[in-house]
Every structure is written in structure tokens, then in C-alpha cells.
Length: 87
Image (cartoon, rainbow, N blue to C red; front, side, top):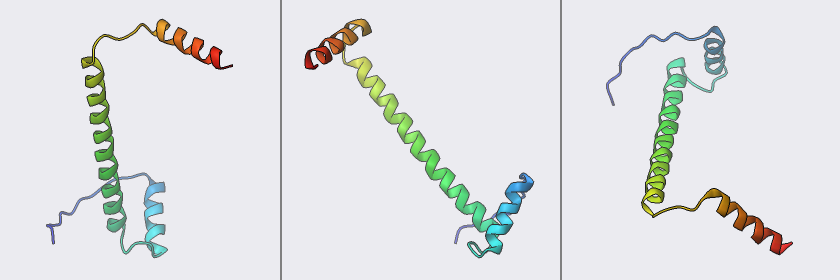
């Protein structure tokens, strides 16, 4: 079992009441359990966001390294012409 460290946290009254109600309702054994689960979820979400950001950065690097681009006006003109031809 990992080492346990006791911490004191401060939160708005509304959140504290939600924690107490959740424990009183039997969903969790303690407020600490609720906070631990919330922190695990926050950590997972943050890791996913970091991975997404790195993937975006890699895509940008790939795009920048792929050669010169086309002017946006040219691209949009070609798209408009394509869609106009389909109508």
C-alpha cells in the first residue's frame, strides 16, 4: 500500500456540502475517497489533454515541414468552384 499523507484542503461551502451528502448517501465511504477519485480523474483528463496537445504540435511540425502552402484565397476559390460544379 502506498504511503499516505494527510492534507487539509479549503473549499467553498457548497462543495463541502456536496461531499458530505455524497458520503451520507452511501456512494463513498469517506470524503477523502471522493477527493481521491476526483484527483485521479483530474490527472487522467490532464494526461489526455497533454497527449492531445503534443499530437497537435506534432501535426503542426509535420505541416510546417511538408513544404510551402497555398494562399487561402486560392484554396477557397478552388473549393467554391468545385462545389459550384456539383450543383
